Image (cartoon, rainbow, N blue to C red; front, side, top):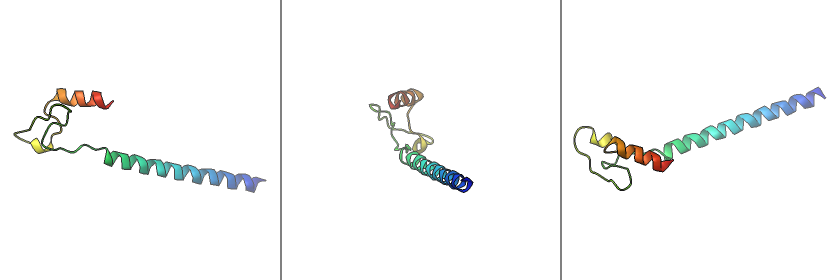
Length: 75
């Protein structure tokens, strides 16, 4: 009887480990596909202001208000 219990426990642990691994893989895939990339224009809908100046290629939004609006809409 103890052997059956031990095998059942091992099986449950393996299933749990596989489920965690699958969950981590899905989370990583979602994190990379849902990432925003700079385009040289403000990403807030309706703004689309062109950027100019220093580090324009690295920015996502033209100003903090646009970033807040985008976050509010995303939620």
